[in-house]
Image (tube, rainbow over the protein chains, first blue to last red):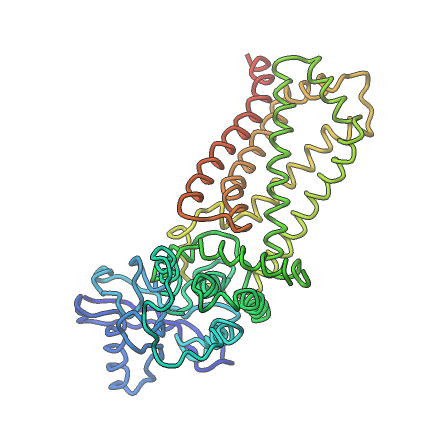
Length: 247
Length: 215
């Protein structure tokens, strides 16, 4: 494949940044999107140019590190796929691919396509955990939980924290991320004890960090690489309302 | 309940509750308007009852508050949401993941607001404070709908209202926490039926009076 890449380049957090155009030949359809960028970078290094900075870690679609805005979509054109798992088969030969970093006040660009997602860590620190000392793994059947409840908790807990929900939301809202964490823990007996304080603390932190407000467009659900449902946002709204009534 | 109304979820719940209140009001408004087609006397009686009944007089203020709160909070939320993404995307394909009306509720709401100002100055203001020049409420409304550009303004207004409502009904329930796999589908169906009843119902009335004038 022969591609024209239009990539956002930005030296550091404070510089302005602009798009650079790169022509790349001999791209294999067998490559993933990140392997294509690796290939571009190897060429740039040989040409004594600064390689394009982007985030990645596991490259198996489970760590949530990678995340690029490709041709106007989070993680590119395929459904329920992370950038690292995105195949170059999804693109046409001789096409132009625009690559941008996540855009949000809460995710400032550090360099090129890398954004600072500390705000997600801060959200988790605000209450996205249980404070009981868990010790070693307990016997699996010592706490009986209904299969349907476990499934619902798992569907919420599958979030990898990539930030695509914020990146795609027209309001840059983090409601799906917070909703999935609050739902997962509120459903399970281990997390129930702190459900009230968790909902209040996480929402307060979310508002403080400058994320936008949810307007229920459903874009986050459509673009989430793990297909997390916005019914988790409704559950967060319920949990929050219930917590505030008790507050 | 400290800080509830200033939190992002609290603000959304305010939008949801006021929105649902306005949705209910539209049904009442439509049922009175449909009397225009059936009987002048019935419409005049209903109109007089709406303007003089003490409970409904109080409700007028509640309704005005509903509109004002819905519009004020929408403006506030929109400004905050704009600030949450200071640098926009160069290439964006939102049509792939959400409906146009869901993304443009504020624009649609602003267009409905313009329509509302025209509507209130046409009828509400004239009936309440203006000079009716011996006309009954029925005559005032029907004579306005017989003017083609007024009828057109109303029909276009109902199109904007329909688009606004297409994201309103189920969204309001999602915000107050009523969403699961079964109920969200049902709410979307109920919302769509409601939207067609309200918009077609309202649009039929100016057309009913305009069409005989054209031929």
